[in-house]
Length: 249
Ligand SMILES: Nc1ncnc2c1ncn2[C@@H]1O[C@H](COP(=O)(O)OP(=O)(O)OP(=O)(O)O)[C@@H](O)[C@H]1O
Ligand SMILES: [Mg+2]
Image (cartoon, rainbow, N blue to C red; front, side, top):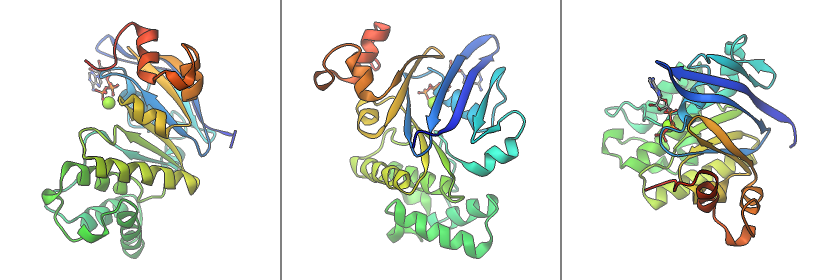
């Protein structure tokens, strides 16, 4: 359990001279749910995109199970799945067709892709809607399809970028249960959110990010203990105490 699975080392990224990620280092242990928390524009998605080999860092490196994103991107891609913040779905296709399509893109054969699609729809609680066009789904159901797609290759490490933004409580609970079940099966998860109470409930450890920098890393309890009695303090208050600002308006 205490084996390091991902190590981000002094990651940096700027866009047109504006620093988005400012020398960020952290580790994620195998089978851990690791939260990356922070307000809009903190640099969470940019960090994920560098870890996921989508965006080259300006400086630093990320090691995933010993493979560098700079030197062994192909090896890293075999280990990871990404559930992006922006939905990437074909609305006119059914849920099942979307999953099979993306499964084949990830290198699965037709039969394998169909099997995995069925399993993943069950996992996110959409098996009854498999044959409906995604265009007819609610926002929360679309998010669950998005998650199911990122699981098609059964990644060892899953990046979930704000999977619960603007969705109904039922879909949110489904996503929580799915993430916990996947971890139980041995998956390592990086979870970004700006909902502090969500991170508190779900994450083993978390990092708080602000203006491109990590300002705290630890278990929810450790972070809360920095400012008071952990039972009486919220992560929202930790953020306020560290930055002098509220996380949300
Ligand atoms: N492709 C890009 N081109 C220019 N600027 C970018 C690009 N991507 C991100 N940025 C900038 O980098 C900073 C960090 O953005 P990022 O999307 O990583 O934040 P975030 O923490 O994911 O925010 P959110 O909670 O809104 O998703 C922001 O100032 C953003 O405007
Ligand atoms: Mg983002």
